[in-house]
Image (cartoon, rainbow, N blue to C red; front, side, top):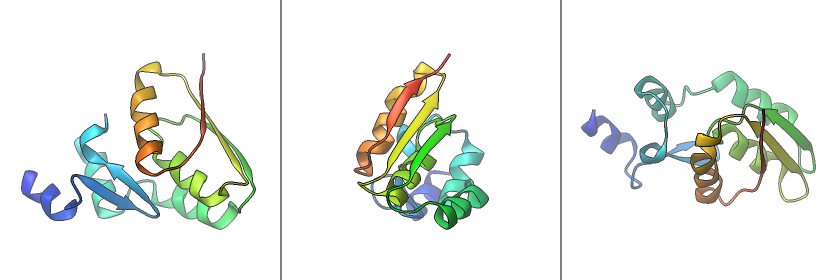
Length: 114
């Protein structure tokens, strides 16, 4: 498995998903999800919808931000004139969420729900 990741993630463990980086070392994702990310299959339908419907300047409310992969993609789509607010009820994911936004130089507001 280590060889697999070295081959697919030569950038210090980071993998490119659409326009954002995902750091496979700092993620609570299971092995199967990490493999989907590396192969481009992670949330493919959702990513296509985001690219099709989001425009610069849009405002987005995301319910269930998890670690911020799709949040980062949304933030790139809406640009600096738009806004993304993500609600995530699990406070243990906050550090992973903030790390995901930081490595992509994107912004979003995280609201701890429940």
